[in-house]
Image (cartoon, rainbow, N blue to C red; front, top):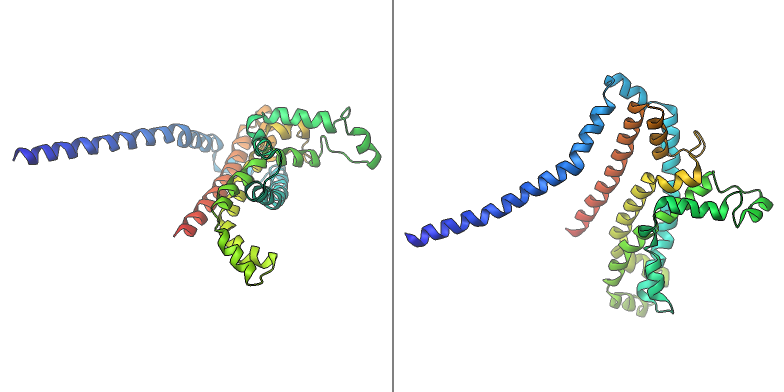
Length: 277
C-alpha cells in the first residue's frame, strides 16, 4: 500500500512540472504575440467594418503592397539562385578566406537596417562615390526603386544561405558519385539526385526571405524616401499613415502585411512537415 502511495505521489509531482511549464509558455506567447494582434485588430475596427473596408480598398495601400511584393519576388529570384550557389561553395569547396567569407554573410544580422540605408546613400546618393558613373548612364538608385531593391537584397542575404548550408552538409555524396559513374551529366545529377534533397530547405528559405523582404522598413526608408506612389512600400505606407494620424489605415495595412507574412511562414512549415513524413 505504501509503495502505491509513493508511486502516486511521484506521478503527481511529475505531472505538476510540465503543467507549470505549459502555462508559462502559453502566457509568454499570449503576451508577446496574441495580445498585440488582438489590439491591432481592435484598433483597425475602431470605425466599424465600413471604415476597415474603406481603408483596405485604398489605392495607395495596394500600390505600396504591390511594390513590396514585386521587390520581394525579385529578391527571392536572386537569393534563391545565388544563395544556393553560395551555400554550395561554402560547404563543398575550400578556398583562402573561407571562414572570413562565411562570417561576412551574417553581417546583415549585426548591422542596423538604417545604417545600411545610409551606407547605400554614401555610395549611390547625390554626393555618393558612384554618382558620377550613374549620371553618365542616367541611372537613379537613391530615392528610387533600385535603391530599395538593393537594400532589401542586403538585409535578406543570410536567410537562404543559412537555411541551405546544413542541408547540403547532410547530403549523401555517394549518390552523386554513383550517378556520375553511370554517365549522368552535371545537370541530370543535380536535378535527379541533389535537388530533391534541397527542395524543402529551398522553399523554407524562400519563405523566410520573402517575409523579411516584405517587412523591411529602416533601410528602405533611408534609401527610398517613401515617396507616395513611387517608393512607398507597405511598411512606409504604415509609417506615413501613423504620422498623419490615419490610424485605421495604418492598422489595416499592418494586418494585411502581417497576414501575408504569417501565411508564407505557415505554408513553409506545412511543406516541411509533409516532407518529413
